[in-house]
Length: 324
Image 1 (cartoon, rainbow, N blue to C red):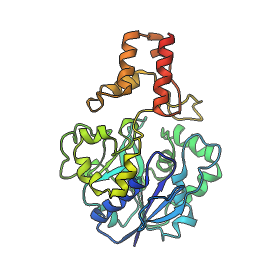
Image 2 (image 1 turned 180 degrees about the vertical axis):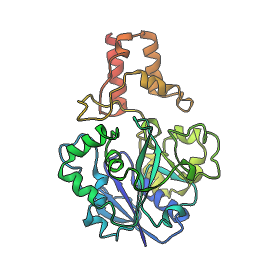
Image 3 (image 1 turned 135 degrees about the vertical axis):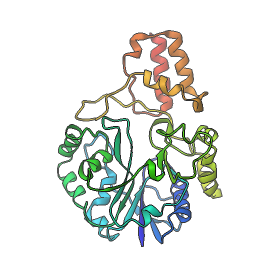
Image 4 (image 1 turned 120 degrees about the vertical axis):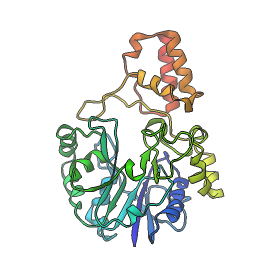
């Protein structure tokens, strides 16, 4: 039996996201499975899902590397090296037999905004043997070394995806957009009005495309309700009704290149997001108008930095603009 592993921590997503993924897999995985959710808050998680305590992120690291611990032999052995690791920010829309029937290790190879233009995406990882049980042991022994190597040798920045990409490069089977695995960020035009029949999975990672419950996304892409919201129970909907979607872009705080693989982008990045038709009315649109009215060239060249809630980012920028 396959074990589906998910991780949930903090308040970015809810138990409803876990539950909807579980029901989606009941429809589309086409193989016996059990689901295990490692979490710091199991309240509301479906009784059919096994709940386990989530481990801490390795200390003194800027980004999140929790997911790498699923390669720890102490965990992988428990599930007989036969598991499917999946993120909960996704909409499953078609048959996933390609994953359940896999006889070799497999990962999603997706588009990327980074140097390589693609990445081994840990939103989907299918493991069938112990070929990669060394990843956690090596990484946790010297995290800074492997973070640096992944970036400088192979050009992969980021968190767990960079490390996994570094270790598995060229030695693992993949699923790609040609197999029906896409992201809403990278395939907006393809799925704007309707979903092509060959699409199996839509990932919702990245900036304003981070949550299928976002009402603006659901209005712009009606198939989300068909394949995702419709699987929510009354309890799930109650949880989601009090939940604020984490879908606004948060601009990262500036750190050195060794601490953070991404170069901080100026406010023009936010202005690019504002041009998306799905988000014609929101606080950041107001922000764009303020920027245009003030014509603050100096400020456009300077990153606006924060790791706080997007509303706080917005208020912070407005204050700075008014002081200019």
